[in-house]
Length: 315
Ligand SMILES: Nc1ncnc2c1ncn2[C@@H]1O[C@H](COP(=O)(O)OP(=O)(O)O)[C@@H](O)[C@H]1O
Ligand SMILES: [Mg+2]
Image (cartoon, rainbow, N blue to C red):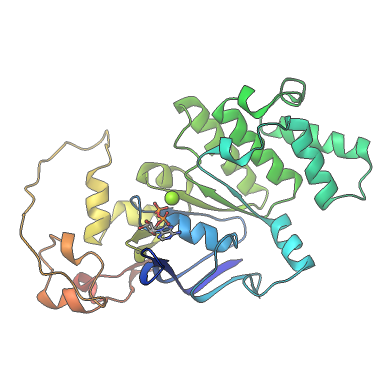
């Protein structure tokens, strides 16, 4: 199980790093084995920052991330190698992941040398072929190709094959679907769902609510680095409570609902204090109160496995 406890990330910004910006604020959630959790929020909400902290690509400023009880920021040497055998990431732009001068076979050779040098070459080659076939690729068509000769969808499936070879247990999938065409999207989503049945856990990062709904057991709704709503995906979608989640839902086209135009109140708000609700400036909920601007609502359980951070439910 992967667990985030009071995790925050502060970036140093400004010309000489003199200013600080809190991109992730006190985030708590966990992902159990074989579970798919989607992390949903608009651009800039801190989703990739969370993914990068899990993958140890950047440090955690406050709080801790543990994997099977081990603090991932404290592991060293062989533990790090073991961690990356289990925890891997696939990102939005699969082209940037590859060295363009290596053919696909070389990418798998590197994996062999790095992680499994004791496995004989013939056995490794068989494993590569099995992994490629299980992501729906024909090894003979792929292995002698350069990355630029493969399509985006092929490259992403290729990356997933790589995680299969590493016996990955936990995958951070950061906006992996965005650049794929519709039919490949379904292939990759179904592939993830299939791998889940084999015990893979996935943090599925997306700005697209409908993708989160399609794939995940639980959802975490993030706004300006704070978790505003969290719980069973179906409960959140059937009964969105936080004004931000409700706003996101309005933007999702649904075939079973008639489009209703709602008037948006345009009022100037005082800038909030650092302790205020992150959504204060954009909130149009009838429950909004003046003190929302200077107090942080805590997550309150509104029904089993569904919590919301808003004054509207006592947060
Ligand atoms: N290295 C960095 N230095 C300073 N600010 C950063 C850095 N990386 C990201 N940010 C800022 O942190 C916020 C969250 O970014 P990010 O995690 O990439 O969001 P998302 O993936 O949800 O779009 C954004 O405001 C972004 O500009
Ligand atoms: Mg991102």
